[in-house]
Each structure stands twice: as C-alpha cells, then as structure tokens.
Length: 551
Image (cartoon, rainbow, N blue to C red; front, side):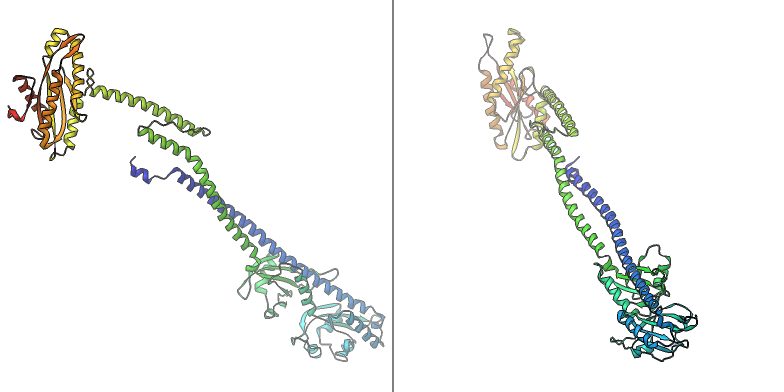
C-alpha cells in the first residue's frame, strides 16, 4: 500500500469515534422519541382527564344545586297555607322568606286554577295571567323543571344590571286542596346567573385553569353558558359526534373559530331523585396551553440529548484514545524497526488481543532480523573475496555500473586500474600456495592503505586486482598516475611471510570512462589491454589505454 493509500485511510481512533457517536446518537434519539411519546401521551391524558374531572365536578354541582332548589319549593308547597283558599297573603310571606334565604330565585309565585298569579315575590306579576306560559301548563300536569330560557316579561320587570336579558330555569308543581282538587300552580324562575357563579368557583380550585373556558350545553347541544359569542349557538356538529361516540370523556377538537382545543366533557347524571336536564358541561383549553408541559418536556429532552451527546462524545474520545494508544505505540515501534532501529516492544499487558499482536510482531521482527542477518551475510559472501576481504568482480561491476549512471560526465571521469602481480607464480612455486595466500592478504592491506577512502579495490581472481577512482576530467590522468605510483611503491617493498623475504612487483593498465568508452565493461577490457602492454614492456609500470593508441 502506497503513501497515498495511507493518506486516504481513516485512523482507527476516528472510526471508533465516528461509530461510537452514531451509536450514541441512535440510542439518544430512540430513547428521546420513546420517552417523548410515552410522556407526551401520559401528560396529554392527564391534562384531558383533568379537564374531564373539572367538567364532572361542575356538572355534579349544577345537579346538586338544582336538586336543592327544587326541594326548597317542595318544602314550601308542603306548607298548609298553600292548600287553603283564603291565605294568599300568608303565601306572600312564605315566598318572601324563601327568596330571602335563596336569592337565586328571581321570582316565585302562586297561581289559581286558571293561571292568575295570586301571590308572588315582590308582587311581581301579581294578578297577571300566566296560563299560557310553560311554567303553568307543565306545572299543572305535575312536577316540572324546564331548561334555560329568556323571560321577556320578567326582564322588563326585573332588569339585569348588565343590560343583558335575564335567563331562567323554570320550576313548577301543581297545588291541590285537601279534597284533592286542583287549586293552582307553585311556580318559580331560577336566575341562571347562579350557574356562572358556581362555574367560576369550581374553576378557581384548579391550578392549571389558565385560559380554560367552561360551557354548559343543553341536551340538544345548544350553548346555555359560555363565551358570549357562543351563547345560543348549536354545537351539534362540533360536540355531538364526540360526546355520543367517544370512549373517553376528552378529545382534541377543532372548534368553529378554527382553533384546536383540548376538550373535556361530562354529561349530567342527576342527583338523588332529580334526574337532570341532560346538560353537558364542557371544559376547553387551547392545545398550545394544554400541551405546554409536553412542549417543555420535549425541549428538555432535546437539550438533555444534546448534552448527553457531547458528554458521550468526550467519553468516547477518551475510550478510543485509550484503546488505540497501544496500537499507535506498536505502529511507531514497527516503523522504527523497519528503519533498522533497535527499540523494545511496548507493554500491552491487560488487553488480550494486543498482547497477541505484540507477541506476533516480536516474533515477526525476530524472524526478520535473523533473515536480514542471513541476507547480509549472503550479500557479503556474494560480493566479497573470501581470502582478502576485498570486493569481488560482481561487486566491482555493480559499483561502476551505478557510477556510470549517476556520473556528471561533463565534469568527472571514472578511471579503472587493472593490476597484476609480477613474480607471484614464482612465489607459489617456490614457497607453496599457503605462502602465496598470505602474500595476497598482505598485498590487499597495502593496496587499501595506498588508495584513498573513496577509491574501490576488488580482487577478481588469482593475483589480479581492479581499482576504480573518480576524478575531475582535467585531473584524471594525474590522479591515476599518482595512485598507480603509490601502489607500485607499496608493492615493491619486501614482504615477510613465515621468515621468508619475498620480493614482487606489479604491472598496471588504466582506461577512463567516458573518455575511452561509454560502456563500463569496455573500459575494463581496455584497462586489461593496457595491463598486457605493461607486462610486455618491462613490467612494474603503469600504461594507460590512451597512450598505446588502442593497440
């Protein structure tokens, strides 16, 4: 894998951070959605049930209030004077006492059998004929409680301070004398304002009554009590289907004003022997207010989710760094070992997989070190003369081939000196090959001392040697001459091997790259020809290929 591929690859720590973040985001989002939905449903249900509970309490109080006032009239009816033909004045006194005790009665009166009012509160409608009014007609038939209605005649006689028409609930009951003959009707108009007072008192007991509105609907779903703009309006289409079909007593409903309200309701069930008028108490609240706690919960969940995300990202980063730190150390050690540095393996104790990796890498690099040592040894054997320790022909040719490719031919030259010993065969014949080998070893030492550090010496077989030197073009000839003379002088000095004084000489031929040839192997051949010339002409001398003119 190249460096570009490495650059494109993600770090393990980055991958761990990314996957950890994705995992945490999924967990937080999933939990937030689940908690939000469940909690939202619970809060919605709780709010709806609170509205229903409020509607139920108001409905119960209305029924109880109606029952109480109905029985107050029943108690008045039981008074003996109401079944006598001559005591209408006494009736007026009892009526006044009743009205003083229960101000909700706007009007109470007693009629004769023909519907003429004979006694009334404040003498209102006294001697008036109400035989055509439902309060008399239905009261003559039996106990009667009528639904809320406006009384135009009473509105004129009993003006409302607010200027709005008075509305009443009719309560009436037949009167009979002791013989059971129909005597008249005990009738009453119950001021509907009492319902508003009861509703307000009950609503105040609820802490979450912000922007709550209470409506009282008739059995036909007409608005009896509520916002002024809805009084008298029919909510059959809005509330009828919900009340008739809903299993629970609350729902989110779009009202005629196009706004959505969370709506709770409770239908009148009566009280004791009072069966009720079929009223439905409705309590509504705008959904944006009713669900305010849900919105706050969702906002809290969102903020908490973001906070937890950052917290877990920090935690994930710390965990990923902890996990990848040993791997990074192993990677750095592997890089250093690859570069040839000797460094110890890091301690990865405590993590089983990393311990296995550390052990495997240790074994691998141990094997590689052994292999490298073996390769180095093989390379040394392949490129070194085993007797003298000098370079061999393979190493020398490799060197000059490399030099020829990198040499600045306009400024530098590569000179090859081909050297052969004079008189070496006589040494072998006279003293044996053992002495000859020792002589070659000593000669290699003198050659090494005679040349400069940047000049290469190789033994290519027997008593033949090659020397390569690099010199400026204009100084190549003088450098070759100086080096050759140092070599000849060093070789001409006597050698002492096992108490034997040995005297040998050497002949040298030289050729130059690229002056004599641009092919390194050809230059070696030319140097060999020049050596042959030296051997043929007095030996122990230097001959350049250029001086013999290519003979």
